Length: 376
Image (cartoon, rainbow, N blue to C red; front, side, top):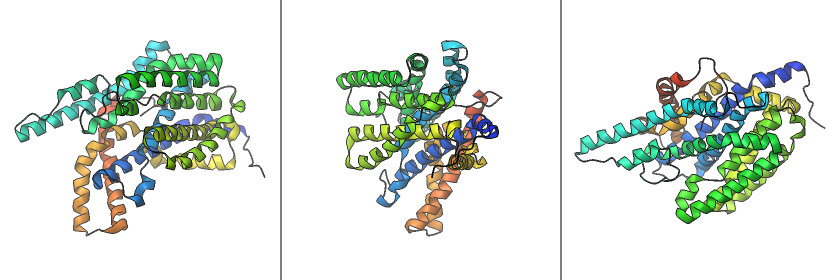
């Protein structure tokens, strides 16, 4: 029995008007996955206990961020048919949106290292780190140090994708989905070859050229669901179902090759989710219910500062994890139940501190009229 489709005009308008709600909620869920993974690693000295492995999906969350970014950037293009203001205006908006909170992070990192140097009586800071971060090249030098700035590599990847976005829009609009995927694949192979010749496996992994394909998947999902020809784009749903099998199979893979398979599989699956949630032609009762669930205010609220959560959560841990350990000691919390309670307390405190960072560093850069945003 096929699911009943909601066809009234009210539901169609809801699809068009409520994108910000459920997209922000998806961003919140991805950010929370990153925070939980890093907390578990910090709590257990960089290891993840087997029983909590199902909570540790930071890499999949990063892939989701890249797909979501391509989707969100494509929304106004799919609706209007063009990039508002042209190429330079698009880059200016991206600079205003991404760079101020990013540079604030780099400044905090510098001040923190200088403070430690003053305390210890010798210079701890390697200024090459700040140079790499200021130039947004962390994806090329991922292991120049082990500081909190290690999270910046994905921001740097997305920053470079912004410069290719107008060309990718042209290809998608003029030649279609397969042409865009072909371009992304050729770019991935070309850039992988260069990195293989001049870099090392760690550089190749953190540069992740295949993220171009994930970004393209987000664009295609948006064009298929919001663009004028959305009724002919159900193949993304089929690809998403197939990706579930790839994720299951990926358990047998290890190393960078396994990550590539997993990244592409999860990215395809996530793009299909975005398509189903956004297409007026797929508004079944189940999809409508899922969208309403995702539009709950707490999730939407957290998603609105998802970029700050990603940037600043490791700094929040500097304060939160010692507090969490003290609470665990005072309450004599042991076992899995104790760990879950400490995780909940730490997550709440971390999100709260990240919201303060959002108010200080990110919110002043946003337009007064909230628009659908792309964040890492």
